[in-house]
Length: 423
Ligand code: LLP
Image (tube, rainbow, N blue to C red; front, side, top):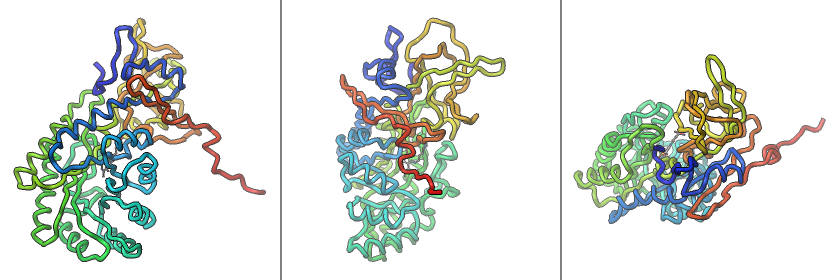
């Protein structure tokens, strides 16, 4: 069984296929390392959210930090999504991909004045504001441009999402959001500023969340505030519950998107808030299991303490194992008859932290292709050029179509903006 990925299958001939396309063939044709994504998997993932929200005012804002490649954004824009952005650069990507600024929410704890102006001019739907200082700056910039900035305050509900500390964001000790007990005063302040119009409230408690309960706790805390803020005479239109729904990398059993949404809607109804527009900001759950990273085995180094399977992908292509000790599935693209042994699958980078999977049982030979599973989210988007390694190419499969959506970077691209000094 291949975890989580409905469009990925191993056929009886031992070949791993995505939407029917033989991954080994794609790896040979386009070279490795290579990200391959299934467009159907992305469409199915977003449809699950949209089905559950049908009949309600809603907007699914794809958190594009998970994978911001233009063709991926285009896929979600065509599916009717908005976007959750965290930089001016992401806004430019949305527009380049044909997305609608009026469906963009702008999150982030440190927006520059230039980014605020850019977003005001583009006409984003909402700024998710994280501090009173940001309220002041945003109001000044809006007034200077003769505009009014729609704002939502990101409140920190102080809820434990039960996930990795680096990707937990809704606890008091995190840098994110406005503390729950300061939020009413912040709303009063927002309502008093000339350049702002309060439109909503938002929160985001973390990523790779595998239970519904933290969402419901956070929603309860947010609704307590909505009631207090509206009692103070400030209307709140939408409630944005953030993203964070987990996926199956190995044996996790997160709720399905439609289950999670149904639970949220039931809680909104139960508390008399069923009329509100609901916004969500899913990232990983829309793209994570839609993608794989293909890599070639370069060298086998069997040893007495550890045996290493050295591949041509590395921590610069997928940082998740090095950064969070994340477990990512690794499968041969073609099953071999030989007996398997235990390998640490590692990249060629000069760091012991450059590993992709530890203690994996695989039958491999140099030249074989492997696939890292669930690599569609926070793979390419977090990649780097460490060790002057050009970034991978990306392919999108869509039914019988195969599209190269990003060419492999060339080394010359990497130092195109550098200058030698004149001695
Ligand atoms: N909204 C906000 C405000 C966020 O900060 C994030 C993610 C999301 C939405 C989307 O969360 P998702 O649905 O993807 O869980 N690089 C890490 C994940 C960092 C997530 C940061 N914020 C990883 O590879 O696990």
